[in-house]
Length: 489
Image 1 (cartoon, rainbow, N blue to C red):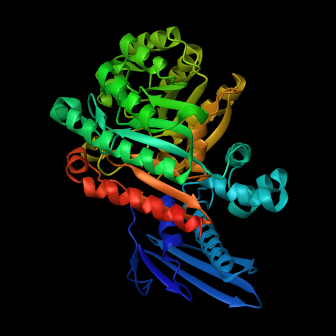
Image 2 (image 1 turned 135 degrees about the vertical axis):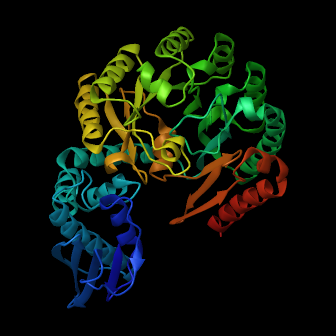
């Protein structure tokens, strides 16, 4: 789409709106020629008397629409920049809504963390006013406004229990039995990379030793621990035991509020591994069926059946883990609203106290995108999510964290639901950016939070690269140390 910007350079706001409202359209900047360009937008910003006005004209295949939005400017220049972006987004959204005749569930909100906007509004005027403003200012539907407020409120409660020296620890195991069709993560199938597992663990053990020493020197407290991937339970029971022992030897887990391990794929779960996890005081395991429909499991490349999921859940229940999370994905290939409803109903009956409902994100590197698989349309995905919300509430679940992703079916959301007492704190900490997350392993993304700043450091992406680049691992830990040294100045 040809984009002409007059009086401003708010490209990011427009590109995010374009991604949500016109998926597949790529921005091309220049002067619009309404007679020659078939798809175009002209966005004009003017300011007068501490007010900003933005007018968006949109044209597509011979049809056109326009929308103007006026908003007061106040506060610091940084705050005014945010107000200008808001005005640009609302103006573009209004024109697109009129042109297309649709209104996305999240209105003009385009970011990954809608609860951050909700939190800001809560601080300004309380929860009721915030919910109203999400609907009136950002055109968010009542159901999504409620979700955002509830997630923000859970974040407020979690933040109140944190100390200044609290951090979370993440360890990544980038191996899976097979690669799912929707996946674009760096995880590699064990059948193709079995020879890398032991060298990877040795490199990870070195990083754990160095990171543990650094955390002790900085006087930090590990509040939550999360092992993800990939599929951590791809490791053997012995490998998992060695890994958890190494962590316990190098980090003080005495102050842990939770210890979560993804046991994702049921074909990687057995009683011996579960005994190892319980012996190391794991408080939550995550079993991720994604669906309980066998035809959908086959379509996404899973080499197991719904019966395997049922068997794995029986073993997990018998091991008496305090908390169990199960993931479902709305919008998988070959799924239907009826099939999704059956999956959700069964997962609820299995007794998980955490259920995370994801919306399929169409990632560029996934097999779904490469092969052009048939996936449910936005209307079908909406039916799935519209079933999930009241059904989970009826069974005693409440939303506690949410986030959005690029290329998500219908521009919807991922929501974590919990029964009372089952909140997954790590999920809140990372999504609400409440404190630092020290990430170890391939593909690890360390997030440093403090002093009004957020910085990131990234480990080598692939297992082989991670093994071969110890200097990269050391550099990230040095960045972490420098950040905390600056906080103490």
